[in-house]
Image (cartoon, rainbow, N blue to C red; front, top):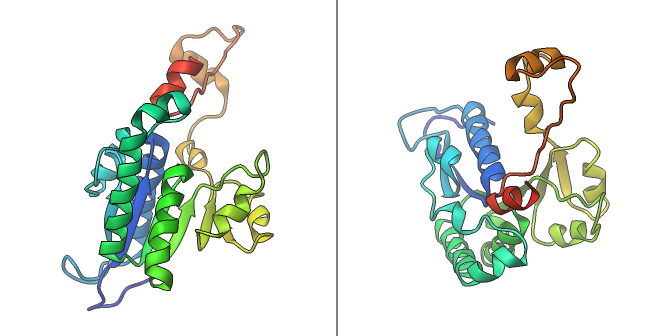
Length: 224
């Protein structure tokens, strides 16, 4: 997509609710900038970003409406104490989307927060704004009816895994496979575990266990 001289920037409202989504959002911002040729001075061509994000997206120029640490929670034990704040932030984010009338809203993972905003803002904005969700829920593993629910509040879905789009096409939701960030992050990395063992000081014949507990603080604390 290329914006010609004199065209206003694409208005993009991003909503990331946790650290992993923040990293995806930052990469998306970089990708959009590379794709949209900036045809003139600031405010002409390119893309303008607004919304909710963390440190990685802030490094790309996003001024977050509030710290994502306020909503990066999971499980009843974490959600209940913060529920009034989370509900307040959903309202505030919805109001910000409606007030800014962006060309596209991209909710990144964290569907419990992002899709609530999409439903409410979409009811007010109608077809004037396109709603995209980045990271498909694992409907192939559990709760398959989430696909139908998502189709009611989202115009397009970006999936990380190549086998996911058909699960959403079945319910009438357009979906594209865009690749998993770990593939890009591991580009140029030696897959031979001997180099990894040498780097961290583990003998070639010693057991090597990798723990990947997640990205949320509570998730890491509990699983660790």
